[in-house]
Amino acid sequence: MSLQSVRAFFAENAPDISVIESPISSATVTLAAEAYGVEPGRIAKTLSLRIGERVILIVAAGTSRMDNKKVKAQFGGKPKMLGLEEVAEITGHEVGGVCPFGLRAPLPVYCDVSLKAFDVVVPAAGSTHSAVRITPERMVELTAAEWVDVCEHRPSGGYGA
Image 1 (tube, rainbow, N blue to C red):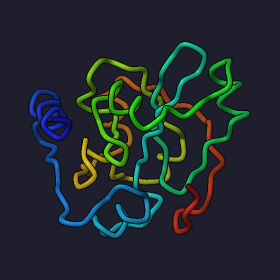
Image 2 (image 1 turned 180 degrees about the horizontal axis):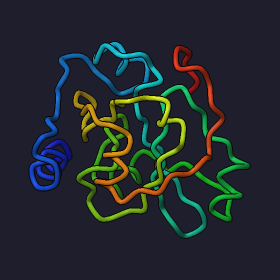
Image 3 (image 1 turned 90 degrees about the vertical axis):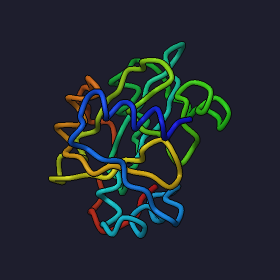
């Protein structure tokens, strides 16, 4: 279901972007980097958070790590990661395939400035075996995201999450 909703999202909003599938799992930053032949920093991971009553998505470079103090300052509350079932129920995507595209219902999307270090990033596409290649700017445009600075930034070669 989830992969289809992402395909439908791109067919309608960006037909020039194709979903790519991998025979191996891309459910973690490390696996995704291997599956798509990129360094871990280029993997755009999507974090599903609850802050008070709000649920938001933050997309960040794979090697960055969320900074709770920055998130609290930006959004006015303490962030709490959604549980596995909650993630699937709210986003329509399984953990390991969560992305800001083809969501079950609209959610606020924020892109961390860590993504700006890359010309192209590789976020998941609704399943643990799919992704897209997209510029950070285009991702922001397509998801009506807002740029934020809420992560500790690490070199693109390392793995920090």
